[in-house]
Image 1: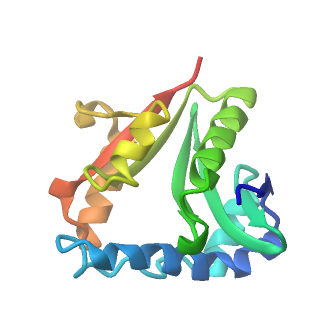
Image 2: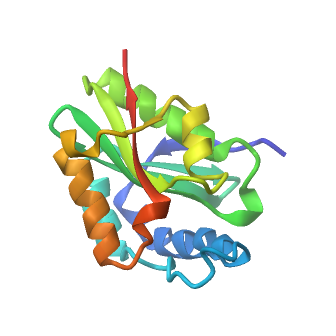
Image 3: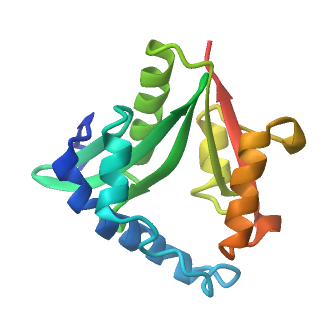
Length: 172
C-alpha cells in the first residue's frame, strides 16, 4: 500500500503533470467555501518543463504510474514550491509529505536558507499539512515582498485573499 518511489523530475514528466494538477484540484469541489473556484489546470506542460529545467522538481510513482509531483523554483536564498499535487487515489499514503521532505533535503543540500509557498490557510491538506512539516505562516507579509507579490497575483487571479497565506520553512 505504501510502495512508491521518488526521483528528480525529467522533462518528459511534464506531460502528465497538468492532469495530476486537475485531478488533485477536484477534491476542492467537496468544500462549500471553495467549490466555486476554478483551480483546475492552471499550468501547461511547457510551464512544468520550464520549472523542471531549473532542477528542483520531484515526481513520485506508484509502480509505473506518476502519483504526484512537487515543482519548485529558486529565488535568491529561498526555494519556492509552486505546486505539490498527489492524484486523489494515491493520497493518504505519505507521498505528499515525502515529496515535501525531499524538497526540504534538496533545498538544504543546495544551500538555500528556506523553502516558501502560498496555500489555503485552513484547508486541512494545505496550511495545517505544511505546518506539520515545519512551515510557519508569514504574518509580517510586508517584510517579504516576493511572497506579498505572489499573494497579490493570486488575488488578481480570483483566489480569495482572506483564505490564502504565505508560509516559510527555515532550513538549518
